[in-house]
Image 1 (cartoon, helix red, strand yellow):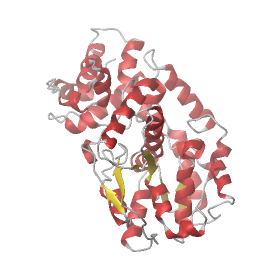
Image 2: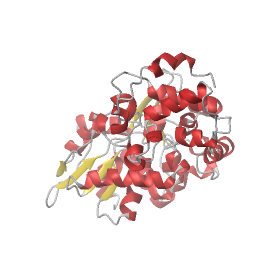
Image 3: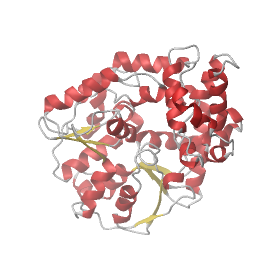
Image 4: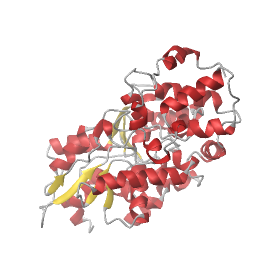
Length: 382
């Protein structure tokens, strides 16, 4: 392969100490050395040095990863594991090692401009349950919905809730609809290029005069923060917007009735470890009257991935489901009634785990809980 030369000395710093093993949700389920970061490093070195051939089995181990970066965070040697694996995926994406499900994902995004393969013009179907279209034709702010929330009915309530919050707070916003293409992050995570998607999305915002982008999707947020030219548009995650609104006293809360609602918060990997956004969602939760926030044993930078990261669901659906069940058990241990997150993929993955396990624990996105607890939602009949 001979493409890992920039990181070769760094790869040699891996002492096989096992810290990455203890931090890896994939290893927690599989209990295989090849599921750990140190195992993947040794595997890549063996291929690079010609000790073993490049095969689909090598790709299976490289892409059976959540890209959650827990291993990078916990590596005492400071090995940039996330960068090593990202480089390896880019170089192997056009080889026999590249998994077919990810080839199919790339084809869907390149041809349909979204991860589901549905006609991209259907991105606004979630508005139908509102009884009216939301958003305006011209504004400096765009609400970037993302592929999952825009195209998977299970989480339609997330854009419905957040758009209602924006309207209730008097924040004019534009929805791009079919002009919103996948941000490109699923492709970049897989090792595929996303240049055309990035160019289109930048042009779409520029054509509308958009100066601020707000999204409920941490993956889109991370992509706009890292893969797009900086300074062209201000990028906010919904939790940052809501935290500022809460600090300013702009959110009209309902008066709580009954006992406090016990909630716990799940940190999405793309929002937490990758972007360092830990305080804003907790600030919002503490601002909601009648909410009792209980932290899980593993939270903030140490939070376990929900199982929905790194395209793992496309490569190994059963493994993703097993990891989700582990995270759900950690939430149950807090005694919370509601598991709150700030990611439509996390909400979807953990809600499906609760359904499969018949666990009596509601899973909500923060925007859903905020809208439910706003006085303005009573006026809308919800």
